Image (cartoon, rainbow over all chains, first blue to last red):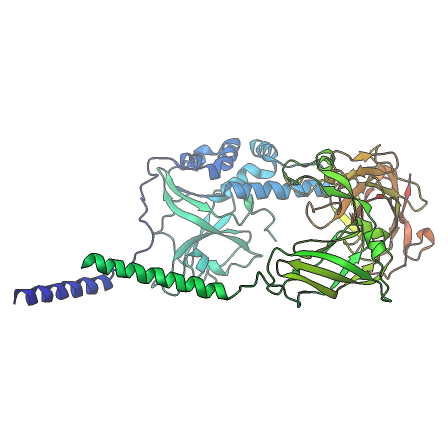
Length: 238
Length: 364
């Protein structure tokens, strides 16, 4: 009798074990980010701490714009070192094609332009700055127009759903990922139901994905642009 | 009881072994196998005279290895045995040590690992049957030949009659257009990089050339740029310059040129670019974008004809100078550099003079 009881118990336990093994919790993707990681550093210091932005820090210094980058309640869309390299490369090719086959437009040339604000180069850096803290709660899917700190310049900032699989979308997810886009408008653009941020044509403005968005710093919001465009969106104005 | 049982077992096992030994001893196992149906995957092998070439390997159809393969007879197209001309040995440069691309960067370093050996023009690899042609094939008359092989291994020897057809043909020993690309001729505002082409494609009407292989040794290449009257440009005095690659810190810093391919033997002479090369093909590998040499002739050395647009051309038609219907006059003195791209690759060792005649310029 005792033996039978033991066998029954074993069978029961095995079944429970097998069944419970089958039932798994849904996997939650990603690792929770620490939103307060940079709350004690200024925007400038956050950039300075990342080697991907060491050249950007140099040109902010050359332009003397550190204080503006660190201004309270602002948003900075930071172009990466890659963007600066492709700008210098394009300018070099222009110089070689038109002036001197051995010519270069290197970082020293850019710094000279910034220090002396040649052709408004220093001012142009202000196109990446908005005098408002653009946190996610302010951003909309259709986008909204903001004046950048560059006089007369308007940027369009949006927080859009994406169905791009390279940005994490699959048809298995219940909610599509959202990404921030920075759109530099070269010409006037009327936002409306059929004219959202994602509809901006190439001859009006240039869209740039924000690869890391919403970093809260001591003085505002920092967004990191991806490498798809040159600094100052060189050569995109039509 | 137990000991007895064990003993019985032992006897049974011993008996079994004995039986196996006896039976297996009765069947004789043949040593290896050799197939009479061996063949090449592709049974024609084309050799361009003077060039290195390798045939496919012999498919041994399950024959035991190691195999020993040698050729026995070679017949010409009439069926006559011509073993003699294929047995004669000629001097051929061969490796004596493994090439190391990291350290063997100079003519001297590569030459130190090479020696001259007397070899027949075609050799059959003893173990896999690959037929290898070397520069000695320059001495074989053009024609179609067939080869008999003899293959042996532990199982015996089989003859493979007329197993491979070998076509010995003539081909350019230094390839240029159209094999390696096309000549391009253009102009760039003096001292700048942006080139506007006069013509870029096959049958370039502005460029005629001559290749003269004037000796079998040493391995030397002389590239000469001359104007339409045959007056050479002077690389030594800087009339001919290599072209910087575009952009910031490009790698490599210059578009392909002879100096980059032969940094230690290149010389800019009064009338030509000169270099010694250690082995063929030369260049052995591309520094990017095929095998083209890019040069500019400085505006100070050249007077360039202005011509109406010439978009396509047929073979053998060349620009005739001021009498040509495309002639419009000459460009303002010193306004443009002349830009030229020369496709070239040497396949047969030897001494070459490659003269590129530019028909729409006059040396100043």
